[in-house]
Length: 353
Image (cartoon, rainbow, N blue to C red; front, side, top):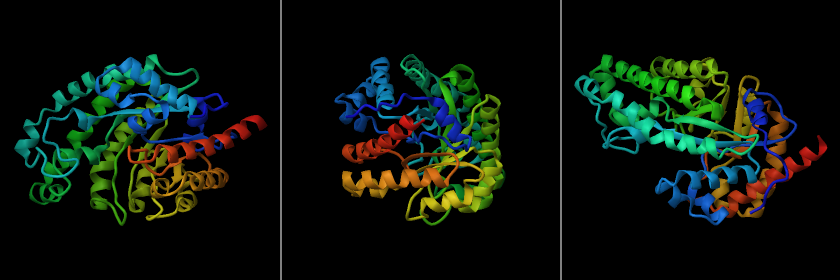
């Protein structure tokens, strides 16, 4: 694995997130599989994480981001990891199907569970943060994903029809839960982070996963609470959302997001995101996941070299990376080819500055 000559600088990434051009390209990834990092570093990072060997694990994790040209370390802990067993984010029926279920759900316990799970990892992240780097991320899961976890994607419409007041209260309770967790996170760990985000997949290939009015009336009002909290802490907010969400993009921008990540060529070319929204928000990604998985390292290197410069010229705030993340099924050599090509650009730009 290569090691970049460019020194990291989290301020570059902050500048991009605030929708400003940089002289040196930034690289961004929503998440990177511990197993892929392990393959590239010759370590058992996944095993260390599973054994809660936090200090050793985060030493490897942070060094990987520094060596491969990132200006920030991406890390989050998801709220749904702290909910009781039986959640439905991955399908099925969740524990909240009625008002009685809503009232008996252990909201305060989830807050405490999350903190007990997350705090040791943030502490290890802080201890191992490389010089001139900070983190991007924070508290994982947005409002809609938590509603899927608690009720289930297929069952949310039934709750909306049968008990509309409960349906509205569900999103308000989720907003309270998220706000309380984010408030404590920013108070205790905010100094580790320069950009905050959550991921909330609102769409799929053809449309939103729920009705536009649900997003506007129930989800975005809760987003605003978190975004205002993050902005109040002096940090920009990045939204990761997959799918065809053009119906509500103006609403999301009005809610205060500073940047958007996630794109899929089958939905729209990245150029459309830049054309439609780069005057108002930063846009991260650009390299399609299907292309990363199905192409050769040589093809990926050529595409990255071409597209990174093209998008950097077209957009205001921009960072190159995949349109989604690096799960374990992405060939490590393909991911490395993208990083290597991006870093060749960064090194040339750095030498010219």
